[in-house]
Amino acid sequence: MSIRKRMFAALTVAFLLSCLLAAPASAQTCSLSGKVIDTAGHAVPSATVTAKSVATRKSFTAMTNSEGMYSIRDLAGGDYQVSAVAGELQAPPIKITLAAAQTTDLTVSPAPSSPKPRNSH
Image 1 (cartoon, one colour):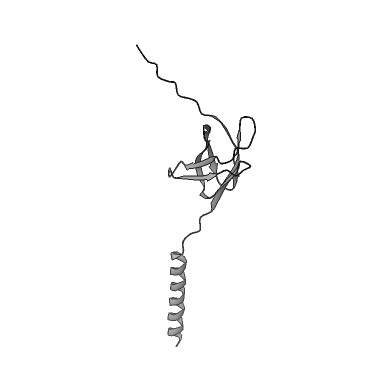
Image 2 (cartoon, rainbow, N blue to C red; image 1 turned 180 degrees about the vertical axis):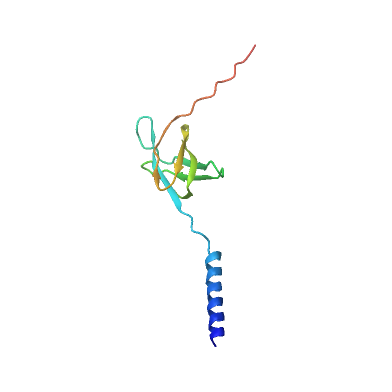
């Protein structure tokens, strides 16, 4: 009988270990939030904020609300290029490193216009 108890205990331990090894590791996620304003300091509603992972090149986007606020959740920690666009306005990308919740405010200004080609006659 003692052999059966030891065998049962060994099987129970093996089962529990296999369950623990099969369970997915829970990765910590980060969030990025902030406010988009124009050069005059006014909130920019309906701007598209993009956070692009430097490592994976995957992009995550959010729209600003009526007060210019945005939030992007469930991001993996790491380096991101963050930018914002609202019609003709854009914020140049900034590099951030996420390790926890972070606030990043962006200022949008008119996009530089490309020079118009000259007509040569």
